[in-house]
Image 1 (cartoon, rainbow, N blue to C red):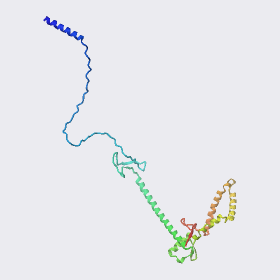
Image 2: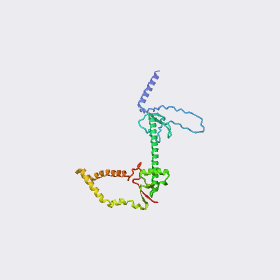
Image 3: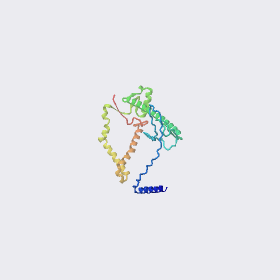
Image 4: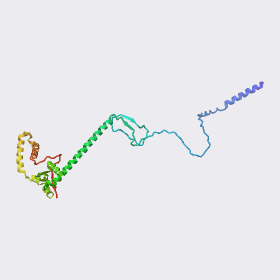
Length: 276
């Protein structure tokens, strides 16, 4: 027993001594820590021939290819009804909104009545103008026939009424039973002689008489205008001529030389060149 104890003690001493003489153990790195991986579930199915469909969910924004801004022609009115919403499909001419009309229907009806009245008046005026033109044309036709004299007995009753109106308007004048044109007429072959009177005025035909009249007008201007306005004698001369022309025309009308035109149309101022 004592012998075993000595052997055990000797063995421990040798073991401790051998541990002291052995090299230090190498420090190994710690093992990496792996993350937990979620197990992917797989569905097993029998392989078959067919179409493969891939389905996915995407987010997108729709934008119009073409935009149109719409507005009412009448401003300042309230919108009564909207028939279309965002995203609706509409066609050209389709009603999408209405304004609060208020009293607009009554105003439209009144304006329609005014328009119809104006159109009626326009048609009436046009008819009157057509009748006036037709009447004048008939009177001028008689005046052309009466250039060399027209016997009243050769006229129909209707033509006699037209001739009476033509005499009243100054297209004709009567001597006994004959009618003659009161319009200034010349043969077309004498067309170059139409301006003989105006050419004579330019060539000094009335210079002597014009000098007498000019002297009297100058004397009147000197009496009527102050000295500081004598330089404006041209304007004074024009103002003085206006009543003179009116007075001459009134005098010629009273003497029967001129006939006032009817409805703005008359023989005065007419000059016809005729070719037979």
